[in-house]
Length: 230
Image (cartoon, rainbow, N blue to C red):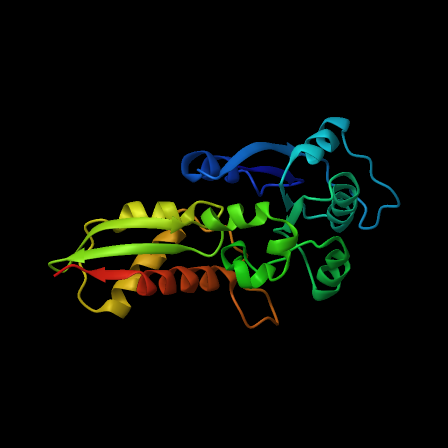
């Protein structure tokens, strides 16, 4: 049983508890801690509550939704110092420089949490064994979509995005008509926007849109998981 601890300094990370509690069989939600976000861009030193540090010692998976870079850096530092076996996943990070800096703590920095899979973590899955249990249930979505007589009879979620959007989508897919497979998969994936998906929007001078990327990830999962019963 992998114990998951979440730390946030803003609005993100609060859906993890519901997702883990409703779907997790190999994972347990340990708690979520809200910490202050410094007003200054650069901070010389940060102190964290003793209760949080004690929970880090107990946790197997540390999920960071901290938007201030110093909060993220010092949490990674403390986590690696206090718990050599903990797997660190940074859900909110900015820039390749930050990602490279955090890599010295073996921090995993997926571009999107729904792009987190065994390939993304590479050799760390052997170094931090509880990471395997986490990825068996949470990360890049995997579903089985059972279609009979041109209609979705059932959707089995094998792995859900940690925010829970995959579970939300699966419930709404039941009873949908299936004519053109591409159109069906696209319309089904668009259901995550009702959740709504919390991936970042498109930015000026940047060619990709994270919300669109999350939609495409779910669309691929649907196409890969189609099972025609008739």
